[in-house]
Length: 493
Ligand code: ADP
Ligand code: GLC
Image (cartoon, rainbow, N blue to C red):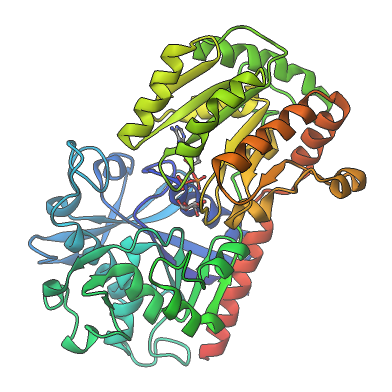
């Protein structure tokens, strides 16, 4: 069987450029899809971190003027991925974050930077690269959202090239509806869209243009990253203004749960942790707990329930709720180890708590991939009190590492953790603690339940063992994506 060809279009891909879970997904899914007979090439902007990582790259396409400067497309293989790197120095050769200036302001030309990515995706979908035509163009999040729109408006490009269809099939995956990618309406012509596109059934979004809406409106299929989030976003409460459109397109919307890279996240082989272990050698976790306490400046207390957070510090993640519950956590005899960065008041709040009780609260503001592994390996429990969570990856890492996840029952958190209620405990399937709604009161109750379970060693070990046995790999999800692509291509032939 000839492999199905998929062009994945994204602004981040692990390990080259990452600000969140999006990169983990776009970095790991191609490898898992290979086993399903799907060949993925990933189109990514040529940020310095990307162009610096590709050797022996081969130019396969040139654009003389891509929104104000020349651009080339470089074909390269790096980090196990088949990449198409959009080398456009006037748009991407900038230091730091992919999205904002070193001082924190969004780059003023972000609209054009990501329209350029989508436009070149549409070029590739139209046959711009000799000998390569994707069957499906798969756009991830707002940065790639215009790709389905460009392909829609361009229509047939190379007649006869595409089996039965004038253009490749298009899939839009929503990783987070909270980022609409909004631009001023006046940019429509500059983006190369027809005047008719500025309409409710086009890219118009409450008086602006939304790149995400472009994808949601024009993609043949819409997916999001968990089945529960796929249902939640049909409601006004979670729909972020897109719920009407999503309800209208519910017949092409589905939720496919993320996985994690189980080679990178494997406590039996992880060289970033103090002591390796598996289900049979769980006792080795004590070494990792001691190492984490030392790293965080916490008291070396093997019996204190050690809670960890690895997260963006934002309202979405419910970090203000946790701040409100910290006195209760400490009164329960717990310790907190936090790694993250985000909103300044939340960062300051945790820093103040750490300064007030350094033996019980440790906080590192920043981003540290290696330490994230150490936290999963050393913590007793991982806290994810999100108000909404499209999927969430850290709770899956926690399951794999025997850190018991304590999560709000929303989105992908609801789909990946089995609450330790009496029925689940009796059936021997519980893997963590869930609470709802996401309020400080309910979080505090969840902390109490968690510490009570922790004080019952047999119950706690069962939670850890069940979690470590759950399948958090990409195998199942990759099968679902492959089926979706095949169904889409089949529907178009
Ligand atoms: P989101 O993408 O919404 O931030 P996810 O749970 O999907 O949340 O993915 C977050 C990813 O980023 C995970 O791989 C997590 O381990 C990682 N991560 C988040 N914050 C940090 C941090 N401060 N240091 C290291 N890794 C982090
Ligand atoms: C987004 C979501 C997160 C999800 C990730 C990867 O960042 O906030 O829940 O896990 O994308 O899909």
